[in-house]
Image (cartoon, rainbow, N blue to C red):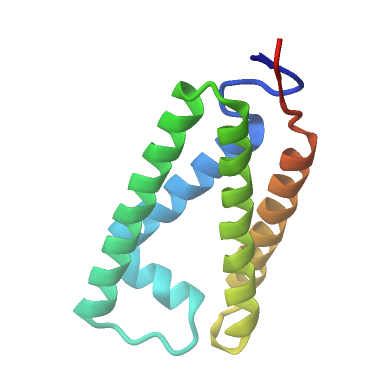
Length: 137
């Protein structure tokens, strides 16, 4: 296959997403209680909330690692396009969740988080539409 209009390694957008994901993961793992207090109005400090933050952070780290490995090892452009679509769908779903629970969020972090969700959703949609496709010899 010849790949048209797509680099095999992670794109700039993918690297930015990895950095954002690592930031979220480390905040959740190391500062879960503070993260919850900074982002939600009805935050209650308890060990269950902090523990769930740590689990979420670990899952984010695992997903980031899987995503990076696939981005650097898989050579099939159609798989890369599917990964791009999935990344955009996840960020879009986070944006919808933010909108549906808007009253529970704390400003200004609510606006920052929603802005990032909109940015990544749109950027992944753009990347998907401009990636090109595999062409048979």
